[in-house]
Image (cartoon, rainbow, N blue to C red; front, top):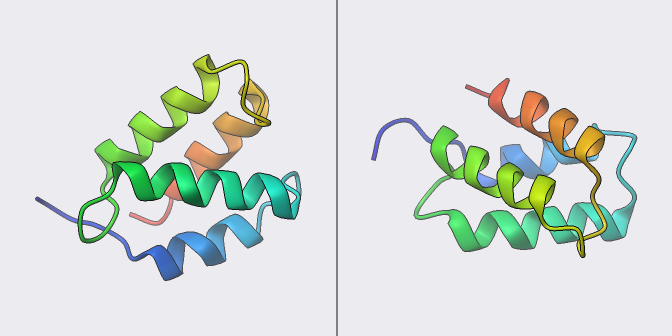
Length: 76
């Protein structure tokens, strides 16, 4: 599978993003859990962020999605 990060590290990174409120953080966590296997890989993060950017019915905007992507890919 390659290198992955734990959900615990992802949660910590998401808490560090001040642009997200609690509801948005929960939404992103739930979305990431759909894309992950054991840990979360770069590919899975990219898929989830792509979903955030193009799904207009979710609470996350494009700017927030880009910040999430940058923060989470920085874990690698």
